[in-house]
Length: 146
Image (tube, rainbow, N blue to C red):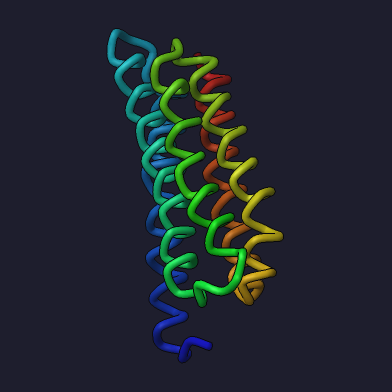
């Protein structure tokens, strides 16, 4: 388990990672010029980046587990899926691309929930749900501005 100082920093940094999601979603509602497609792409790209990060966490989990367990294979396998699923979202037009990213972030949480529990990381799920909710809603709200 993590000490209180480290846990506080993880919470602060996790929430700071939401600033681009929220800021870009708000900007999409405020900017109705030729600048809007760029902002939409920036939001989708950040969503793809975070989805890839979420996948990468599983490689860390997999490497930390004993090789005798079957779980590392599941973590390594799932670890590449978010990046592969994020890529088409970047190639789509902005409206479906942002909706795709929001759905992908929710899918990542849905898959991660039982995998984190099996890996003994359930204590992270509360923060993870908060971060996922704000990130996905930002993508959906950004898409609705288009």
